[in-house]
Structures are given as C-alpha cells and as structure tokens.
Length: 235
Image (tube, rainbow, N blue to C red; front, side, top):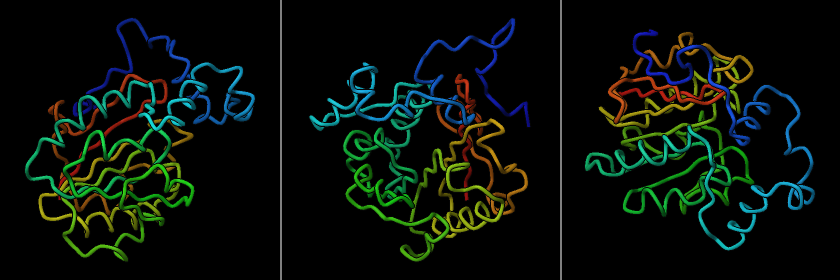
C-alpha cells in the first residue's frame, strides 16, 4: 500500500520541523495536549491575533479559512477539479466547522450541495440544505443512488470512533452514491485520531480505490504534523 501513497510528510534527512503555529495547535489538540483554544474565546481575542482576525472576518460575514496545508490542498487543488466536473452534480459534505461556512458559496455554487453534521451547533457552518444527524443514518433522508460525490473530512476519530460506526457510515455512503460515484475521505493518520484501521472496515471493501485528481493516486498524505490524508473511493 505504501507504493500507492503520495506523501510529503517526510523530507530527505528526516521529518521537517513544522513552524506553522496553527498546524502545531491542531496537532496538539489531536494528541490531547494543551492548546491555546483552552484559554477561552474572550481571552484569545486579546492574546491570539490569528483568532481575533478570524473572529472579525466571521462577524463581517467574510470567508474564514483554516490556514493549514491540508485545507490549502483541499480548497485550492481538489475542490476546483471536483467543481469543474460535469458528471458531479449532487454533493454531500460531512463535517462542518467555522472554516467550512463559505464552501457552498465559494466552491460549489452551481451544484446540488448538501451538508451533514451530528452536532446541532454546526448547522450555522453548513450549506443552505443542512441535516443534523450522524452519517450512519443517511438513508433516512436520501434514496439510493442519489449523490455523485460524498466528502467526509475530519470525521474519523471525531464521531466515527469504532469499526461498527465506520461500517454503518460507509455502508450508508455506498447506498446513497450512484454507480461510479465517489467517496472522498479525509482523516488524520495518527494513533490518537485514527482509532480504526481502515483495512478493518468491511464497508470500504465494497468500493474500488480511485485516482484523486490532481495527484493521480488514490491516497495523498499532506505535509502536516497530524498527517492529514485524503483517500478516494469509487462505487
């Protein structure tokens, strides 16, 4: 499998020292270490310039982006290829947060775009058509063969925490995708946030792996300390 992985996480001579404070904070959070987020919002407004900038942009209803390499890859390289494809009309995006609020308007304004998140508070970060529920229950809302693309990013280890959860969720994805439809799975390849070995997830065996544009490989590991990885599957 390693031959199929396009990875920039290691450089010649050893692992790169990650200097981006945002990526370091995400890594610390994923590793369950102390982070600046634990200071509280009001404290961070006066002590964390990046947080204050995001808060101001959010209040002004401007796009608020996550300044990390994995999001740059997703938003600047992967999304444009997906949005340009005529065979992709209906999209489900799973996993919403403050940095996804602008996704429909910015990246998929001419698509049939849906969002889903189990947390009620995430509704404000989703698209116009948003569902509050777990991915395992997708069949309650959509018939079989409905979607051309499902993007499930940052949910493994943040809700999908067992083999059973993953089997039910990805079975639901398989049923809801049309033949030839794709599942884009984004996950952090670190022990604390990958509680399930994907090779053990039976439901993923129903899919074929599929090249992820523009990388010409089905698995792409980003150059981040939390080793965020994108996998592409096809029904």
